[in-house]
Length: 461
Ligand SMILES: Cc1cc2nc3c(=O)[nH]c(=O)nc-3n(C[C@H](O)[C@H](O)[C@H](O)COP(=O)(O)OP(=O)(O)OC[C@H]3O[C@@H](n4cnc5c(N)ncnc54)[C@H](O)[C@@H]3O)c2cc1C
Image (cartoon, rainbow, N blue to C red; front, top):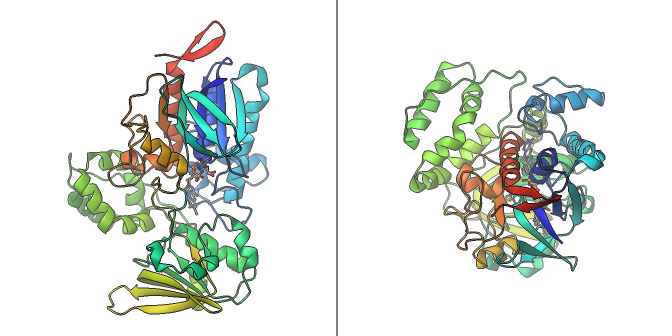
């Protein structure tokens, strides 16, 4: 059969879109969700069961539905887990909320579109020139759909060093994807750990290590050594920033600094910019975007993607007692060193390389860019001309309606992307408050193109 819609991916983006489609498509429509995730619907981030893995967005902003802001806090209350709207709930609870909301749609069997979950990874596809796009699954089967939405998330970015600078013998001591949490149970109590990256994933992994009884030395290495800044215990209201029309990047940054000087806390200025961020990004030239990424992105990320205050306090206590050291430097190689690995790097500002001997290296650098390198499916789609890599390598080229722009003109199929893959067009599109809006818009666009005739849904040409 040919499905009306296939969603490839099984994280928040896929589930938000599925729920919106179930709410809007006629019962004759058919939807398939292809996902390889054991925590179906919770993706990489929300299937954790560790309480200290907390949301970094206040509960009041984490509803799946942009027009029902209390939906998540109401759900928490109904489960006896009421929190204040400004609090940071656990990510595991958010995952359960997603599954609950999906389950409530699934129960209305007769009134909704058909939905099939296909537990598989889509590894390849055809050129989409026939009746839709046909995907090859790693389970051996195939699946075809007339409209496809790519919801693949970020994937692992690979090590931040050339592969010939990593000795084969050292590879067994490198955890390339820490989200397969199983690696934690193989860590010795006093093992020395080198974490590559100093962002949200690093903090998650450090706290997980501690909770599992690890007491050894941890060194986090990243190019700038910047760590996410905490939210305040009491949130201040966002303040709208006055920006001149067509402002240059430097003018925007100046305006931000000026506004921050005028308020009690700079966070309210960053939060006030949020509704304008996508439009600001779209107004920048490619050269300006590239400059922003080189010089300001790391700073922007730590100010913008903040962490829960008590998570920050726990992490800082580990820094203060010397358990964790965060260092700015450039990784130059990872080599076998008998019982461990020798991590070679040049500290920022120094001419000389130095080394850290570790039992394990954990790569936590993956979440910055989606890219396509990690995904055989996306590489195939690129070779076939179905998708194009965006100029800054953030993801793939989409228009402002999230429609994928490839080299090939698809005749009978529609192709959209949601989430981090679309960062080249939207920039701020990795967190729930932005993805939920995008998912709703895509669902509406798909619904408008579906033509229901004689009890069967087809795609309008
Ligand atoms: C540590 C951390 C904490 C975060 N905390 C928050 C937070 O508190 N609030 C917030 O709003 N955002 C948070 N984020 C951002 C988060 O990434 C998004 O909220 C959200 O999880 C993105 O969902 P996604 O579905 O786009 O991607 P993912 O969650 O990565 O899901 C993509 C899914 O697609 C599957 N997939 C990939 N390729 C294929 C294929 N070929 N075939 C089939 N399946 C495939 C993957 O296995 C995965 O299950 C956090 C991110 C990190 C790293």
